[in-house]
Image (cartoon, rainbow, N blue to C red; front, side, top):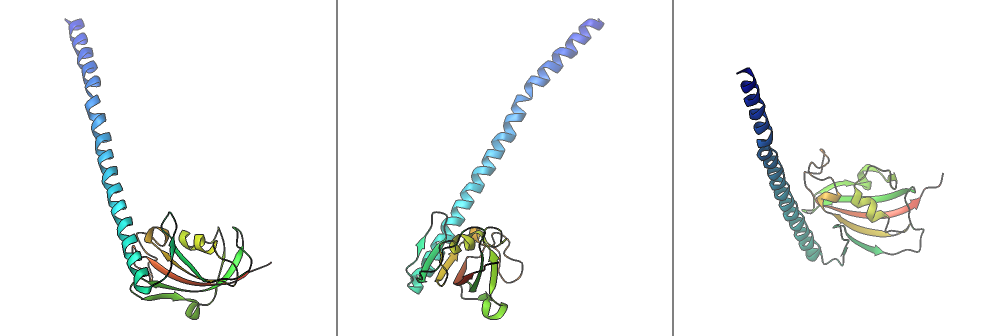
Length: 176
């Protein structure tokens, strides 16, 4: 009788372990559904940001180009100055505005900016734009939120999910 009880117990455990299969598939299905929903939401937000920026560019009648990752740029004063590379320390004048025209920061108020390209801790879109420039040039960049301060803003003057309009004058590469 004891043997039969042990065999039944082992059989029930075996069945219970094999029936777990349905439970492990369910979380994978839910995770996939969540991932699909997030992908759709991100795609929608990227398209919306692009439409807002395109409308802004059209209103200002700027002749801008857009990179594959969404950075809008226009070098409106050309120069034969030095090209930039990662590791260069540069100085530049700037202004940063929101698409509604609100001025957030500027070198007039906050002083000339100095950063090391590639290690600045600045927005990825700004560094990408700066690398397109030569010393002495002036440019406009429009950074969509994902290339700027993203979902949370800068917690000071730039709100969450804001596209930024940069006006830059690249002054010099600093030699040490």
